Length: 334
Image (cartoon, rainbow, N blue to C red; front, side, top):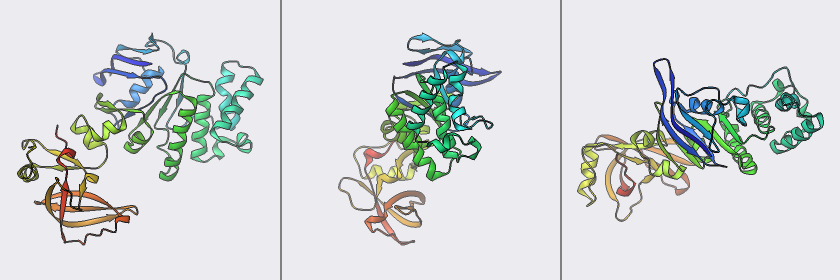
């Protein structure tokens, strides 16, 4: 288990991390999620040992490692830039850490070949210079170099951000497969909400050096603990006072009219649903995305969005009037 206890990290007068308390379970795929500059990478680097907290403690398996050197923490690290050695071939890059540990040639070869099989690189690629590899292949080599040392913990700092969208999706599932096969405790840093939701057992959402919420992907998305989490994760509608008043006319479960309310765009329907509130809307425009179409509506002069699956053969003409149906249980207020 990994524990951060009352960890604070300062750079001069700037407080990067404020009183962080966080526990990560053995074998967990745990993601640190948030916008740029929120403290997620700083937190990861403090665990690895690149940064020493200004105060507080970090524990691994109940051992205080706050002031333990990087090489003694048994943590593998994959950087955003991969940090491979351009003058070495793939085999030499993967073997580098074992050579530093003075492992025998036989042991190095055995371990390198084992990990190469796991990441599905062929022998031809093994003896190519890393600069000749694609971004996806370089990412695999960086991962192999980290796991060949059989670390107890694997840390990944935005490892897919330099790849194109299609390759990123494919490697995302491979990363999850590697992690499950190895059973290794993994900390993953990203600003990509979709990555966090698809990969993680649990997620910590960071904002300005603090954790806003820790939970499963389902909890983070469907039971957001704050306005920031709700707005940062996925696509959401803000419902202002006028719309809330209209909703309150139709339901006994009254919303607080002095606060904004939020509802996910996929929780707004155009097919009639019993027990749901109904709002009159005018179709303003649409955005075709292949599997679905996103619509923008005007409701009491406010903008509301929803999505319709294209296999439902629903098409709303621009300027037409439609009824929108919302379950008040799907509306969040903070």
